[in-house]
Image (cartoon, rainbow, N blue to C red; front, side):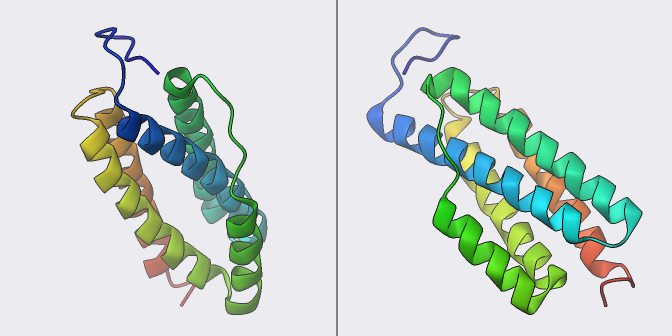
Length: 141
């Protein structure tokens, strides 16, 4: 893997982080799409679909650096879908909100080498804020 900006090779540990981030993004894309289908409120559906599209955009960003396509984590999809089926949408949104925070932290580290990643980190913060708004809304209480 190479950094397009500086043409310096990306260190192996960073390359692994990029693949992990890419896999997380495509997994989260599928999860948000599923949550949007489950949401009853039209505004919540729109927000979740918008977040899903951002996650797909992030996946494609990472693909520029990894030069490979990756599949979502099937086990995570399966597990997550069943947990939200049993414990509900609110539980699923709470888990996703925590995941957005983890992504921000990882992206801040990668951003030291690939500055464009800092924009992704900002978008992950926006996702987290949008999820918190949905969670605080009276509809889910």
